[in-house]
Image 1: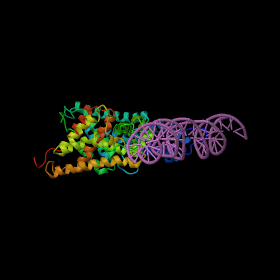
Image 2: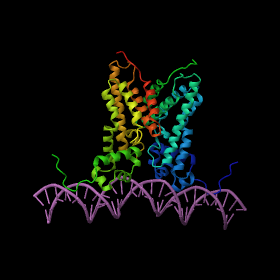
Image 3: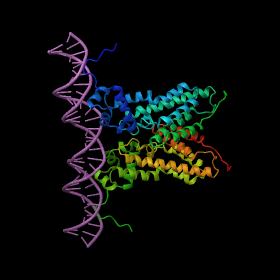
Image 4: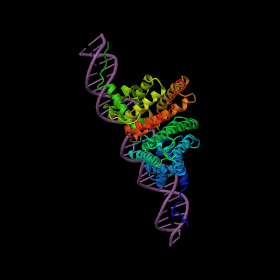
Length: 202
Length: 202
DNA sequence: GTCTTTATGTAACGACCACTACAGATTTAG
DNA sequence: CTAAATCTGTAGTGGTCGTTACATAAAGAC
């Protein structure tokens, strides 16, 4: 049973406001999105924002956490559902080409672009750590495939992981620079030609 | 004959101050670098800055113009000195791996990272236009090689240009995320495996 | 009803932003 | 020498930043 809160009830829908904050941060980045921009986008006043979400940095952290579980979940899904790292990265890049350009939200990836050149080093670190963690995750999955003979023995897992991440990051910036889904899909397809095919286990 | 200025002479070296402004913008980006940061880095007062360089945006434009002719000239040199687009891009990415990480200046590329998420749209456009112009230049050189039979007939010049630019952009962000020259060189090497080799003219 | 709790709107806080008015300093021109 | 020109340092301009104090409103507890 959900017991009702004691005091005056909140006059706005918290998840909706969080989503609107996500859109604002996604489009303009952490630094350029002012609290005034946020209150306007969320349709609430500053005290309501601070009461419901804490300060700007805490709100951003919550935005990032929900983003990676929704808009940013395609990468994890690809690795969870595809058997090989090659198929996972190929699917991730292919889906990114469309997700980075689809209407209904800003172009590109929030994790890649929202905290570049940030005056608060901790905020920059929030996204940088996620990007580097993703690279480490790619590397781990590639290494497992190399050890399983799924990829050639000479394959460098770290280089292939970094390469794949670099293409994803480049695609995000190009989406923000105006690239179309088709153009990005062609980039993703080109990138997969750099991947070795088959290993000792074929 | 160089006639001396009429009034009180400038007390600082203009090119040196411009270089120090370049370092500040390169490291922190346009938005995050305040005029106060600039005057501190350049060792001059705000009125001197405004008298010598105009406002912040004008100074940034001059910084970008000198940057692309110095630190950012390696791409143009590669295309000017290498015969094929493939060799030019391979050399450009290989040199970028070192330039993006060498000591003495901030990591990555100013044109790629200094005006991401900028509250002044015109400033964002300054760098975005340069990035897109570079892609168009890559595409043109690749198309010429395809037409000359230097690259396979089925090659998509636009896709290969965008792919190459995406790798460069990803390498820049990874340099800023802490990647080493060796790691980026491996990314560049991996990227070149996506390039077709030889054409009808072999 | 009153008390407590929580949310709200108004209206401000000090700090910093890009930028500049102004007076004094330092030069050449005559 | 004086006059004109240019640069320099001080000290500000109005505006926006992130954040919050305060009084009021709206709910449950009793």
